[in-house]
Amino acid sequence: MTSLGVAEVPPPLPPTHPRACTAADLLVNAPSLTALVSRARKLAQSPLPVLVSGESGTGKESLARFVHEASPRVHGPWVVVNCAALPRELIESELFGHERGAFTGARDAQAGWFQAAHGGTLFLDEVGELPLDLQPKLLRALEESVVVRVGGRRPLPVDVRLVAASNRDLRREAHEGRFRLDLYHRLAGATLTLPPLRERPEDFGPLLTSFWGAEAPAGEPPPEVWHLMCRHPWPGNVRELKHFAARVAALRGPRLAWDAVADELAGCDTQLFPAPAGYAADEPAPAPRLPEHWLDVKGKTVAEVERALIVYQLRQCHGNRVKAARALGISRSSLHERLRTMKREGAALGD
Image (cartoon, rainbow, N blue to C red; front, top):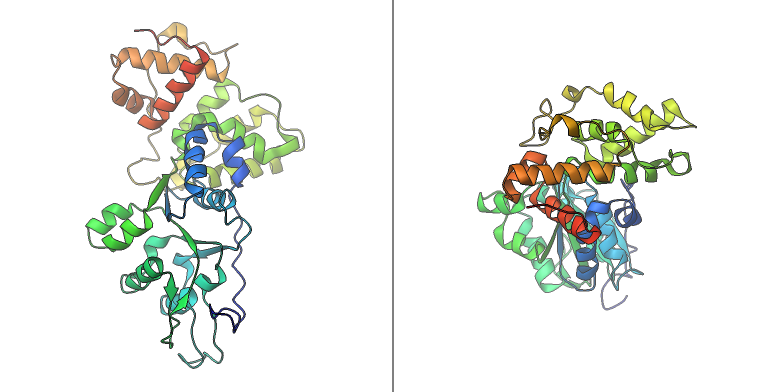
């Protein structure tokens, strides 16, 4: 038996989950996430807990895995626990382990996920689903780096880097009494927020190309296809886009063309999918009204159309970036990132 008490009982095998996209996808195939991934890479070098937030399907697990793979713990275990999938009565023993006879059916002692992740990273997905009465025990494990198994009394040291994720606003939940404020502050030692796909239109083409691989059509989506993709709400975010890409490939492969995307999008009924909170599925993102001579997109690249939209809307809003972002249907941070890109490329913004 080691001083950690790990070797006395073989730890459970980490659960496996399919990833919506790989950590490499975040780096290579999502241009809008460049700044976020750079921040994640810096945070990976510290021992701070990281809280990843974002809507379902945005790639929270992929970003969490990137933090692990970019950290000094890369050769240690990577353990994923979906808190929402654990039976309430078994959550404590799953996380911290149990001793023999701790409850009916506990014939042998069992290490928990904290011990299984010793020397590596423990990813708690949907951490907001943890019961309130269990949260103080999680807080103690984080504060003191020890766990006590169910039915046991002996503190067992653990060396774990924690990354948590939630599609809920845990700060608001904490202030409204549905999540412990002290635990929130401990989990949010550093935060990473993934924007929804509808606010990242520049990622459509690169992500689809990544999902299709060698079958992908050449070049980027034509402007008319890009506009159709911008009009779709994508309530399932990157996960929905991945399944959409698979459907297009199954129906139109092996030779894919961008018009297949347009045809499939035209057949999508957005009423079948619940929209995220604060976003109406039957009301697509507001599109700025352009002068008639700007509506001809033939011969223009997606980047040129996007630049024209941004410049026009900034002029309409007299340089107010908050109003311009709202009119464009994107977040303020996304607009700032686009403006930085335009500045690097030497695009004229006008007055």
